Image (tube, rainbow, N blue to C red; front, side):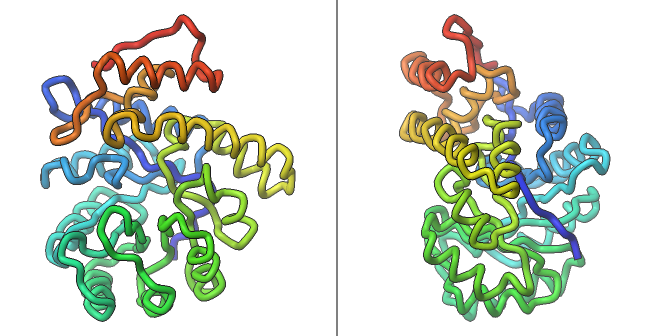
Amino acid sequence: MLKLKGVVPALTTPFKKDLSLDIDSFRRLVDILIEEGVHGLVATGCTGESWAIEPEEFQELFTAAVEQARGRVPIVGGCSGITPRQVIKKATMAKTAGCDAVMIQPPYYALPGEDEVFDFYKEITSAVDIPVMVYNIPRRNGINMSVKLVDRLADLPGVFSIKESSKDFLHLSAIIRQVSDRIDVFAGYAAVLGIGAITAGAVGFVDSTAVLYGRGAVDFYDAIIAGDFEKARHLQAEMASLQDGMFGIGTFPSALKAACEFVGRPGGWTRPPIKPLDAEKRAKVHAVLTKAGLIPSDARRAVG
């Protein structure tokens, strides 16, 4: 079974101005983050605008991530969907491309019950031989997976971890206590929960802040592991300030993409229905980054 821990950024998906995939920029982002010391990467998750990616593009993105990583870090392919058939098709693409694992959230929109969610994962793990990261993200799909359900899922062959993104530390810690003897627990929202999550027993975090914060996110994780909580608290405060400053500027991940461009990382355009930031909102993002010390006050970059 795959062993993964540490900082695992959820990659953005760069698009060109004509809204086609910018694979070269995607590959460059993979390289930048690996060179900065991250421990794994997730492609086509929520941060990667998975809802806007065409079926045939998943294979292209999985392949590009695996080829560019060249075995330096594990690649996790986001393979969520509403039906088991949809997910199995994506997971098969991920396996064919050479991904080390797949990340799957419960069916969105349909709002199935817990037995139905369990059967959903059971069918998928029985059909595709690739490690599965369960993804609890109630804000995105309307389902908050209970500790009891996660406990059942932890016994499914193929399930090796869970990304817990409810933002509820009590829920996260209860899941860690219940299943960490069988599967690994990753936390979302590292800028909010990072220190508490790792000290409670999470093995790392998967989130979007690390795409922008880069080496700083790795330093944050290393400080927690080393017990240097003064440094860890300082870095978490920086990450939280950065995240809070950009919250509400445009629709996620438009502000994140603009911020990446400002600091010299591939960001690119968003695909409809998400709109790229206008000049006023880009100026707000620039101000947040300047205050955080991530760019010089006179530095400006254009998206596209």
